[in-house]
Amino acid sequence: MSTRTVAILALISLAGCKKPYDPPAVTTNDNYLVVEGVINSGSDSTIFKLSRTVNLSSKVTTNPVLNAIVAVESDQNGSYALHENGNGAYAIAGLNLDNTRKYRLRITTGGEVYLSDFVPVVNSPAIDTVSYSILGNGIQFYVSSHDSNNNTHYYRWDYQETWVIHSAYYSFYKSNGDVVVDRDLVNDEVYQCWQSDTSSTINVASSTHLTQDVISNNPVTFISSASEKLDGKNSIIQNQHDPSATAYTLLVKQYALTTDAYNFWLNLKTNTENLGSIFDAQPSQLKGNIHSTTRPSEPVIGYLSAGVVSSKRIFIKNQAIPDNWVSASANSDCKLDTLFLSYLPPGATVPVNQEDEYFNYNNKVMFKALQIPVAAIFNKLNSAIIGHTGSAPGCVDCTLRGTNKQPLFWK
Image 1 (cartoon, one colour):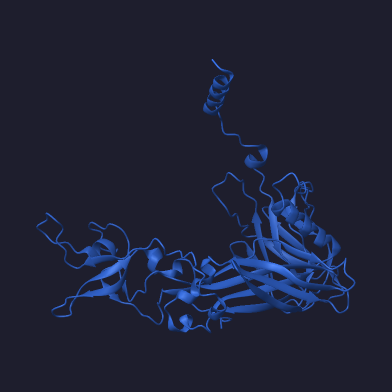
Image 2 (cartoon, one colour; image 1 turned 90 degrees about the vertical axis):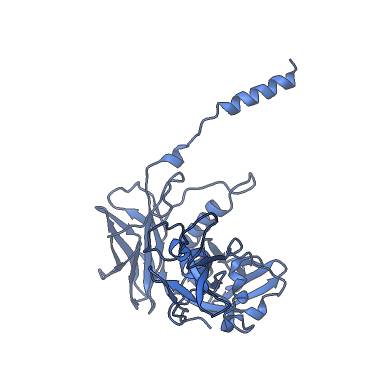
């Protein structure tokens, strides 16, 4: 037997004996507290999101902290209680704090108390511009800012984006559960919706190496030319199909940081985004400024900052999107079926109501699969409605992925 044959047999034997390996980092039962948000010292609301980490092997992807007691405290013993808004969010209206004082966050949950260090108020200067460039493969967004007082030096940005989505088919009808009826196209139109998302990457920059406190054209986010986020121009709604209509909008928020806060976010960015090759920085321990008072050794993920947050919004019109860009629509697998009020299946002697089988969910007899009616099918002789076309809910109802209520900021 040749050496090569022995090697191949050995590899096959090893492959057959493989067992799943879950390292301790994957199987640990620790659920560390995650704190997201800043103390807004101005007139805007202060919002914190509390959650706990989940194992990589867990089927649960989110673990919000509910029924917590959350308060902002000043170094002069002032206290401002936040109200629970559901799903781990806690908020309070504009605090208008004294910028000369320091503040911290107190969280009580599950019998444990978490306190942040007291932090100073560091207000963000206004954003100069949010701009974009049309590239060959998509749109690149940038942010520029400066501090004429030369006091900021450390910056962080996140963003909220909103875009138009549309269904594969425009539905003129709906089922009330018993029969198909006309759809209220003013209050219950489900063809065009708006979908939103928030940034998932960490974006920081420093001007300490410059002679002036200026950040110029810092990249914020990139949208591929094939993204559905740019597919709004293909909507058949008249006010959206207009070249001057808005297809996409980006709201950029800017935070001024202390040196310690900047180092935390930079370290977190390195640990989460820049690992994967032998040339990348090695993982390092994250040390935030939020601690458990009952278990001091317990890690808490997050860093508290305080200050006024500046923001600026930019809109992308349909006419700015090149005509040769083809979006990867979520509707590519959709198909339209024809369903009749009276249909005689092959080989049958008794007709069936196909609409009861697919549209009218209260009629449980032989109900097959839920669809949503789209358009009427007419008898060519007397124009009577003899059925409707229909398709799967995800192909007709855009509210399954977004909202059909136009945002107040939309242009």
